[in-house]
Image (cartoon, rainbow, N blue to C red; front, side, top):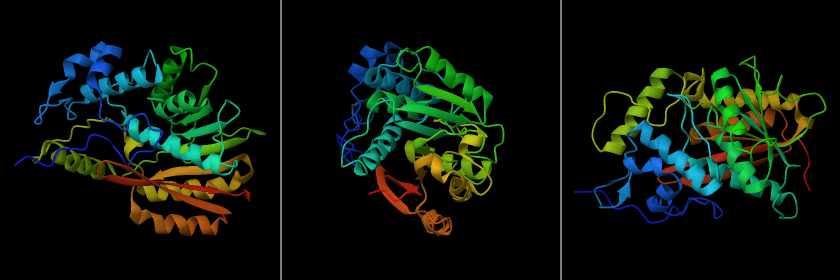
Length: 308
């Protein structure tokens, strides 16, 4: 028996998210004809792609970015993380609300809003969406020179992104803000999608579970349909330790950023993260729930300023 048919809209996504409805593959192919060979009828006789196929997933992203955000060139090196666009857009919309809630409910737009993306990645997706939806300017940090080259190429080949996004190399992987935030520089917001897993073995195990659910049969060979390099998928101590380090280091740059924020995928990590925020004496902490399909996550944001 087939599982229950999916709903026509992704109602858990933010109200301003352009991806709340089901993918209109005719429109996407009109915008990006290269997607056409990957679109097939699924078990429900609906048009879809094989999400098991990394090339198909990458082409879907390219089509979404071209259709909804007018991105003419977008590509990433083989085996680099290909992030799901709807979830990335949700983060941007929710933190826009956060900034607005401290600005008498007025959505903050324009390039005077400066956002830092910690671990911008080869895809440059968060800055793309932030620039296109709100006109914010971005500084992206990255420890991987190949990812930096890819992100810079995306910026260079899209005139609407030029002058709006800067990418900086973080030479010390143990540092998050030191070496990136320059003297006298101030950001309204920092965002981050931290490495989730504690080891490559754990990352592969998680991928096998995800793909087995996707294919509705046991998969024993890990294929990263969304790609990902080691530093993108895992770090020692996983998400919890990475975020705790970020929080401790943010204290040193308390005056340099209005709001620090990060995605937290694992609810079990929240308790220790709140404890760390208490230790560094964050003035205000916000937890923003997010949902996409069956996946539930949240943004945790903190500030050292007393916002009125």
